[in-house]
Length: 386
Image (cartoon, rainbow, N blue to C red):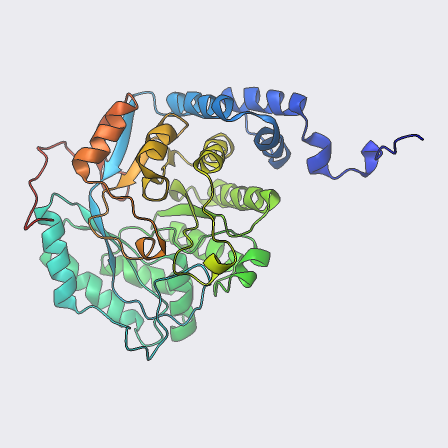
């Protein structure tokens, strides 16, 4: 009895090009600085072993960042509110409107957190919250103006594209007007929260309120009004290999148009205390995370900075990531309330981040959230045990 073989002309493109030979050729092209296709990336992730892939990504990093520096930032994640009209199944942080556990921080509470951050040597704040139905555009603009009036050099990296999308719905104003107003009020850049996987088949299933087209549209609009943004990918939501590649491809297309993404930050779903955790209880293995982080360095040839997520991968994963393509290790996270509630328990202070960078063989460099280098300075002492 003969074995049936599927004719080559009816294979899908991904199947047709996903061969070890294609993977080897694609890897060599990426290392030389040639742009690779989605099919190339598919072949690489399918057929290249982990150490070879990480070494290739490290060589690309060395070509793009030849100074031997790995950057980090000292800042604070401030969540101004946990009230949210979206019911994302991967989130353990939000509370529905009317919940007794809901809160909105006052201006004075936020100012106190900023002062403590400055006392600890911090340069800025990453501020995000839920999709609050009652907070107006003017509330945010007044908050930013008040911060800049009291702390003029403090860097504001605030409000994800998803939150801007929520403001569109509340105010019935276009993203360009909202973003221009917030920039005038003092907003410096926008974090890439809410990116998750930029495929609506996943986003609808996980109840993300902002679709992929809107997330990308708002990011591109921010770039056009002069607000740089970061880009993210949260893996482990039950998405396919092809969906992750589609996510990377869509980011690269927007970056070709706007050149506004200053960094790419991949991380992994943390299942604890989330509805989705009952369906997907296991965390993605560190090696799988590192493979996709390395692939992103090869594929996203137009985004200069790649950040490894020590928060979700731990100390050893962070060091391996620096040897696998990342040139940034992110924030000390003086405060973090969202991912930690879902089970990300890794912690690091500035000394520990610098030690991780040095262990990987690099020189630490302080930056702000906009990826602007800051002068080095003596490490600050703890304040009141923080």
